[in-house]
Amino acid sequence: MGVLRDAALSTFHARIETMRRFDTIVIGGGLVGTAIGYGLSRAGLKVALIDEGDVAFRASRGNFGLVWVQSKGLGAPHYQRWTRASSETWPALAAELEERTGVAIGHERNGGLQLCLGDEEFAKRRATMEQMRREAGNFGFEYRMIDHAELAAMLPGLGDAVTGGSWTPYDGHVNSLALFHALHRGFAGTGGTYLPNATVTEAQAAPGDFRIDLGGEAITAPKIVLAAGLGNAKLAPIFGLSAPVRPQRGQILVTERTDKAWPIPLGSIRQTPEGSILLGASEEEVGFDTGQKPEIMQGIARRAVMSFPWLAELQIVRAWAALRVMPPDGLPIYDESERCPGAFTANCHSGVTLAGAHANLFAPMVAAGALDPMMAPFSAKRFDVPAAA
Amino acid sequence: MFRPRPDGAVATIPVEVEGRVVRVPAGASAAAAVLLAGLTSIRDTAIGGGERAPYCMMGICFECLAEIDGVPNRQSCMIAARPGMRINRQSGARPAPSGEIE
Image (cartoon, rainbow over all chains, first blue to last red; front, side):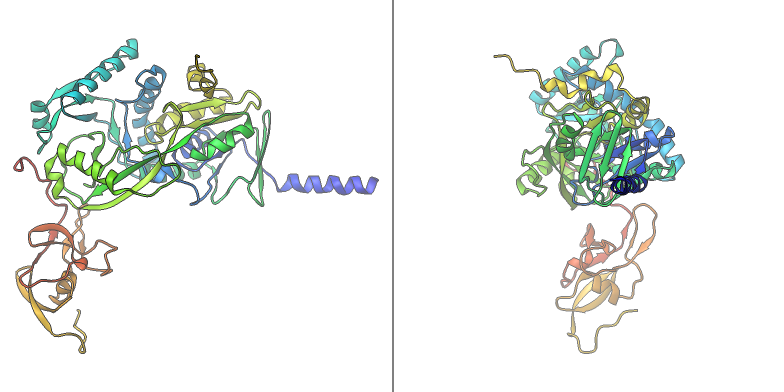
């Protein structure tokens, strides 16, 4: 009896010794996970960042690179405010990352324009922007509707099909791959532990006590953040959370490099500082299919050429599709577990725009152990409300 | 630097590389013409201004970009030489065509 018990105990102790302990485990090595992981690691926490590997869908490697505010949060003032807050903390994040890592991420925040083709789009856009301003209350929302003549003076070669556009000073853009690289370097540079090619094979959750098996190794921590993109849908219930996200496909076309064509990004058209022009903004519900579709690519190109007829002369040098991480109502989900306090989740389709908020606002909340009350409207509880009969 | 293989096809197609006439065999690429012309580079990069010459010869590396018959940024290794083709240096990014096109 005694011998058996000792043997069992020594096995137990051996298991504990092979388990690495952290202050926080972040599941997901994409933009959302690395931004949060970086924010936590920078604050002095011992953080493990688990990255699944190239079997994952990798939304972070397929995005467009906008830090975009003007169309986010219509009818959802808390989201408008969150996006704005992110845009406002972005310059600090960009400067800090560049200084710490030496990676130039090319962030610009000089405002942005959304072009409208036709009177109907322009009128609808005006109504949208006015509603955004109303919903901003005394936080303010500065915007201008700019007509064709004024736009044409700002944007050489503007097409006659463009009726006008909406402008806000809050928008910007960034080299999103460089951002991703800088966040990873920043995470490692502040002492974070990156665990690549690590798939969660088993997870145990108790209040303030989490254990993740990675097929061969187990790690534990009193806190955990689920930032696994589309993977969150399956992971969340284990931790008493809910993350009903679905894939939404977007396609992007990239042209050859040209001289600087425009001073600021134009929504679904943007030029990188290096000169490539990115065209995008399609939305398709096709499940986990990451393929491309000529009709969609043609639609993207057609709209771009209507906006600037000279774009038709440019060669397309790259094109790809990627899957957005889309909650049912399009708004982010941030939550903390009631059943297992210490477990948090972050889900959104704007990993670039919200990187500032994730590193500088969300990570400190996780470090403090609880989400700020202002995050309550982002809880997945909003989906539990039964529909009115 | 490069010579045609002695057992190769006869160079019959005249093209102009940077104003100089070079003959290449039928089926040769514009990039092959650049190399046969003895040029050590055919473009300057858009950001750093570094010199580049055809490299992979199979459409992957984009180093062989040249202005061909007035069209900038063509991948010269993917384009067959035609009689009278004009292949010129690609200097940096192409201009963003502006107001002149309606």
